[in-house]
Amino acid sequence: MSKIDFSVVIPTWNRSALVVELLKSLYEDRQIYKYGETEVLIIDSSVGEEKNTIVSACEKYDSVYIEGVDSVRKKRNMGIDSARYDYICFIDSDVVLKPGLLNEHAEQWLENNDSGKMGGTFGLTEFVGDKGFWWKVLEQTTFIDSFGFAKKMEYVSWTLGNNATFKKSILLDIGKFEENLPFKLGGDDLDMSYRVTKEGYFIKTVPEAVTYHSTETWNNKKAVFDRSKRWGTMEYYTLKRHPELVNRRFPMAGDIMMFLLVALGVVALVKQSLIPLAIFGVTALTSMLSIYFFNFKGRKKPNIFYWMIAMVIQGKYRLHRLIAGLKNKDLSLAFKGQYFGIWHIRSSYQTEAKKFWIYMYNIIFAIVLLLVYGIVK
Image 1 (spheres, rainbow, N blue to C red):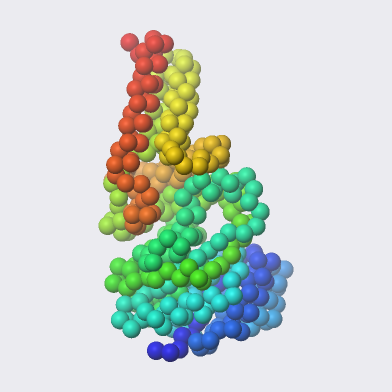
Image 2: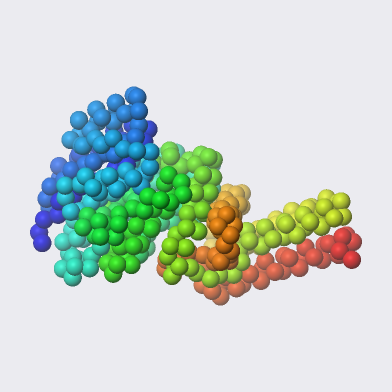
């Protein structure tokens, strides 16, 4: 095989300024592409001036405009169905390309597809733009880890919906993107790409294929909290669809604090006293400080203020996964997580066990305070 023809699929909505920059960078990259033909499909649900700007940009940069519905999943599937070529490159609308991206993906296909088991490629995404308060918080979470998988792993079992390529024939065989999931977006890229892996194909990372992602669509409170809700909820549905990914784990800080808050809240109501809630506050603070110094022992410590807010956001993520289970009358995933590999989990079972005992010491501390203040007889 010496030719790779790419259909580039880009779902978007109301991001005309970002789309113009993306199409410009794609047009320039297509001019230096060496291994075949290319086309760009913009699937858009914008209206008014936003739509007009995107249509004009498509005309200027040799791209096909397709009017889509208000669903990222359906837009991606429309792109798959409309693609002329058998290699599809998915790109998000809030990035620009580093020159040579398409060549890098194609070269991986040319080098690795002899076995017929090559299922996809996944590139690297780097964030650029204003990195204000909420971005500094995000950097302390795991929310942006997957954008850098290509730097840390040679192969992945799933990808994001950006800077990833797949064969159209494989996508049609596995049923494309699942459209009947909660929310309009989130989790469908993970689910689809993992189904490629489950069919026996491998996904090769391409760290030299780089997109630069604008922080503009992330760097605010609403975006951060919306993602924690959406992704936490979607993790529940992902694990129910793919139970082999369930990772049993010790209860984490958010789980412990939630239990303690409920328990001390009940005591506060029964005793008609605010002291139990004050004890919860003290215990939560000491627990967070204990985990902070445990996590970064012997290493450079991040700003503790940003880190503590990040832990609250990750607790909110797990809370929404729990809520999704409760709505389905299902607690089977309590104290379990999503497993995709040793690096993704980050810490060993032994490390989790040590953390668990830190939580237990803090609960014992709370009980001692309750006894001292005479709340528990």
